[in-house]
Image (tube, rainbow, N blue to C red; front, side, top):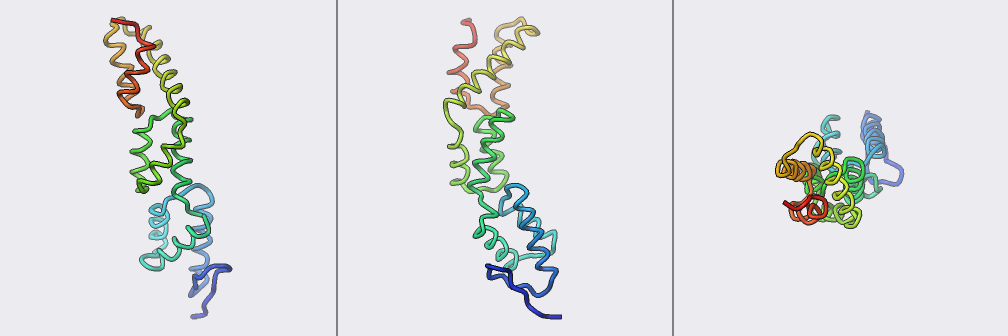
Length: 171
């Protein structure tokens, strides 16, 4: 059976209903949540679609705005910052793990407002320091643990030091 189907509004020709079904599955996959081209490529591999055929489908998805890596980076960065209070370094690392371009990573990080970023870090430092005050009597160790906590969250050392001056008592 070798009749060809064409997707409405796209240049992709399908050799059978199976391929048309796969495109529908992939569009739902992308519509459900933001995806990178790499994630879509991996999903297509699971459907045994490779090479030029896979790239054609990805091209269609980009054209139809099912895949937009800049939008993904902005959404991901904002979400991780607001919900998990991640710092820019940790967010950048996670975006690199998703194989996004430098441009997309930069756009994602630029979407985080600097004043909100500093306020969040200040509040994070204050809360952690107060929590440690109850369990750690040594001032130096308390500051060190607070610094390490903020670094682990992905905040920059110079910003932690700058904002920490207003929170930590003088030695």
